[in-house]
Image 1 (tube, rainbow, N blue to C red):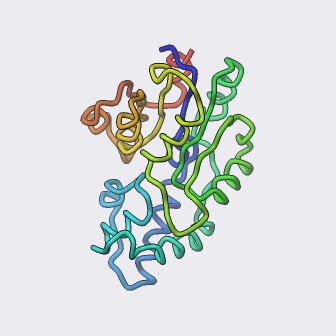
Image 2 (image 1 turned 90 degrees about the horizontal axis):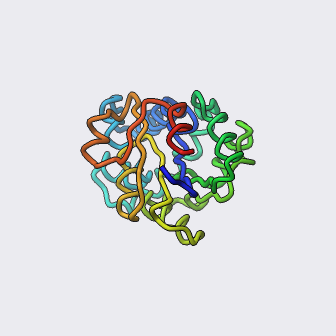
Image 3 (image 1 turned 120 degrees about the horizontal axis):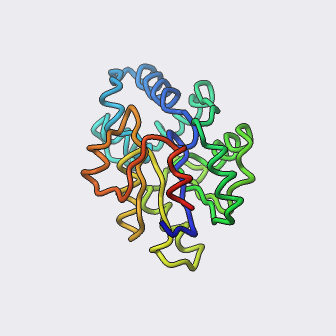
Length: 212
């Protein structure tokens, strides 16, 4: 595959953060006297903007959920993990040596994203990073990917989005670029197939041979 620009997701793709997100969400729900959710329920909302998560769980308008987003971001540092996924640093180093344009599109806030990238010592690999603003609102993956595309004048045939949820692939497709899905405990090969992922892998280690 001829690739000049790679857009990575962060949570669940480069860092192992799913459990921390799940624990944060359930603590917030408990504190606000709402029912906790199961891992299976969490699977269905993983990767979506926070205000949309709360809108779905609490049956509210997304515009009315910004207070919950603020609470989530206040609680999250207690549970945030900064462990890289297997093969993440090796892949980023490989792509850097190949002089690829490496970017990041995450719904995380800029402050938390910067902290995690510094703590895991991978921030130096990225040429461009786009995040949700440090306010109550999260941007959609569709919007974040489009922000990256507007930064570069590169043929869309040479651009790929890599993520661990169907939202990453849907965002890629809506922007006219390829999407690679990484199978994990929360997103199966079948689910990636249903949203027409161009390539599906089981680990980051497989991507060196694909992104030559």
